[in-house]
Image (cartoon, rainbow, N blue to C red; front, side, top):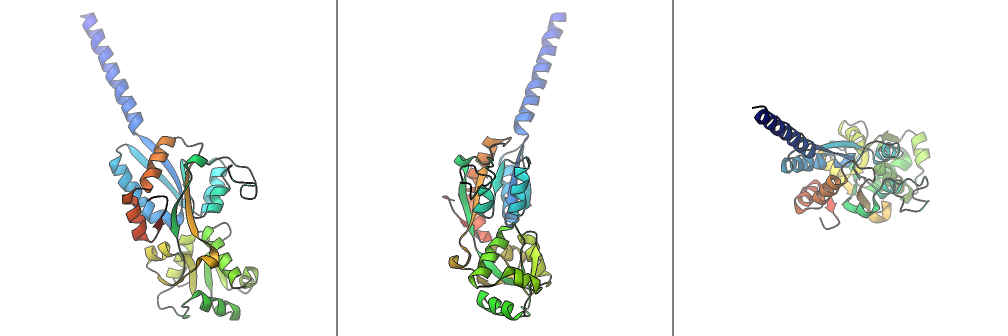
Length: 273
């Protein structure tokens, strides 16, 4: 009898151990740091991925790419990083030279890095377009005479950096415009879009995808000569707790299913999406 009980007890312990291992194996979490402009599409794609992978939980941290890069450099837990511009990714990638990565940070698994998406910089106006801003040319004229309030991304925000290039393209001095109270800054692209939606400004420079998500009217998009291409790089990080899962989710973001959703949102999928 004692022998039978011992066998039964061993079987119970084995089942409990296997159940615990299965729970541990399936209950994986993936932490993704992503540019604020990806909020809507990645949230939807994350839900689809979780539905197809029971036990996997995606944790998103959306924000300005500059702030996200700072958090990663400070040691924040992150498996996968999606930036709204190469500059912020370069700051974490040791394979880049000292002009692009002056601190010699080594967080990016360069073998996984790829250009995932392309976006467009757009000039958006609030409902009714009270100042009649219908193009970047018209915006430049209005800024010169001091007849407009423009919302743009702040320092370290990719959309703000693209806007700085547009101002320079037109020979406009950002510091002078700010001193004349013609500029209003947002901490990320979503904050800029909110200022436009709430009619706190006369117009703003955001991405065309954020304009679509916010239901804003786009009156012009910037040519490549004005601010360059708007490329979104993505990479698994070297300190990822779940690197295999991160690679799998990144592969999913390059799939036809993900590509269709990105396209519908206004992005142009790259890297074979």
